[in-house]
Image 1 (cartoon, protein in one colour):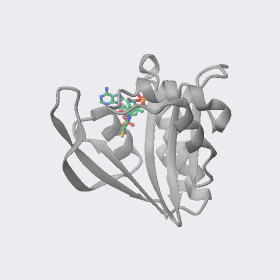
Image 2 (cartoon, rainbow, N blue to C red):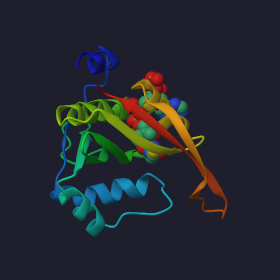
Image 3 (cartoon, protein in one colour):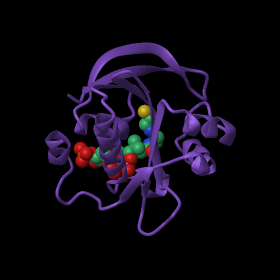
Image 4 (cartoon, rainbow, N blue to C red):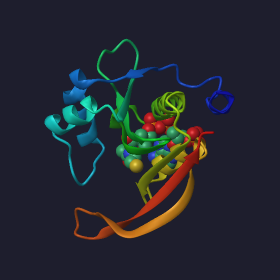
Length: 165
Ligand SMILES: CC(C)(COP(=O)(O)OP(=O)(O)OC[C@H]1O[C@@H](n2cnc3c(N)ncnc32)[C@H](O)[C@@H]1OP(=O)(O)O)[C@@H](O)C(=O)NCCC(=O)NCCS
């Protein structure tokens, strides 16, 4: 996967990544909560997703910690996948963990035969937009009024796509 190796800088954060399973449901629920999304995932919902054979989940670990500092989860259908969520702990953002995590995850998806990856991100989420564009995701559509905001307003969702093949 030369395209992926080129994107991960030689000085990229040397964080460990590995796939997560149902035993990490509690950690995934906690991390998802820290993502600041309008709708939380409870541990039961996370456990169901982690146990779902069509769902691929990876975690990133800082230092020697056994507790993930971030996770990313995608649902695969045939040769397409949709990223359902990606979160890095707030106090560890901006140090390359998200890039290490998404790079490893895209490699996992490609190894499973995925050729197109889709996602939705809130318009104006600068960190996520930059992370996705780093790997070559491009905007393919917009849904106005898609995300409910705590103040009662609604934000636009930007749909992005990456061709892995
Ligand atoms: C999006 C998120 C996972 C990125 O994780 P991270 O560990 O901070 O990412 P990295 O440190 O690897 O940085 C990735 C890129 O984003 C950029 N970035 C990081 N924080 C940024 C910020 N606050 N504003 C603008 N760009 C930022 C980095 O410079 C880097 O860009 P580059 O690849 O062009 O150099 C993290 O910010 C997060 O958990 N956000 C809350 C949940 C969320 O919004 N998830 C996305 C939902 S679709």
